[in-house]
Image 1: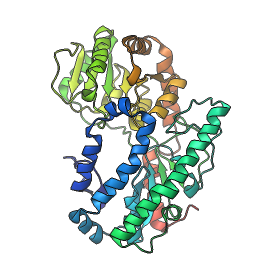
Image 2: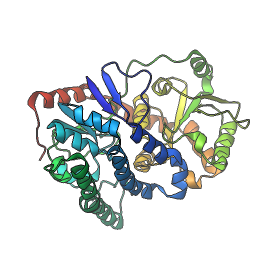
Image 3: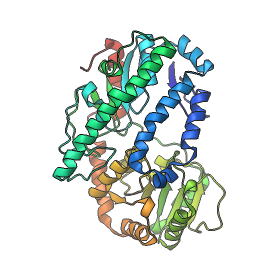
Length: 416
């Protein structure tokens, strides 16, 4: 039996072999953290500073967990042979792995984060690889290269001398893990890293042998069924086709400022195509007639439809990988985390167009949609990326399964 420790409400169609644990304290905390809206936070805080809010948020989240008696009861009685740890601020799993003396591995939703390089033995390549947080241009000047190096060192020292000591003390005091090594030393004992990346989409990095690129492993060849009315909308869109618009689950379009929604609606109304929007709120009277809305959309089915012309997205890597698999060009409007970094790559390689929501004008969005529809180079470049992304000696999901079974067969394997 697999167990998933999650902060999101358990889905109705959960896998029968997976037991999902959703601590009420963690669920409540995440709802409070995202309740103000990540879209609005981009306007008021800024994408770069949003990264730093995660540090205090993580400490507060773990403090809440350690006051949750129901969760602590589960923690004390749970037993695991292998623990997969999300690389993005999920350090509580260190305690779970250490308590069980379990083999543990990291799963990174992007390429490995720069703050993990030292522990995982990843060569530092700041001279040419832009930092995710500050998303400098690919063709970095000397100034950007210096700042790129400085920002990585800043994160390392901040985690080593501020963030980690706070959590280490918290775990030792509240969980009684007095003999647990420091987090930096603990991380060096990881047996595997599954990284949601691939050189055809990101960069050709110098990765150690136990860091396995599995970008696109969630993309399935067999798709879920599509609702009949949605299928009819896509089939009937004809030569003008349609554009999918979705900002994922954490950044809902319904939470946009009214002025920004007005820009989107006006561009949709004028465009020579139809639009399909993920929308989970009351339909406003200003919604254009060429728009189909639904609270849930089978995204991979839609991206694979022959009539799709493009995808307007927040730049999450899962959605980008799905678009690459189907060769669908993008308009990327970053909201949070590494999405700016992702959007820069899409834009510089002409696989799509990056826009900035906080300064977006009507003309800019009109032109982005028009260019995506009329310039065939975006589609051509995405199809080329798709061929490279999909052509591998082993499917990424098969690779992830094989390496998982490998470390289970051989026990803890140190990366250091």
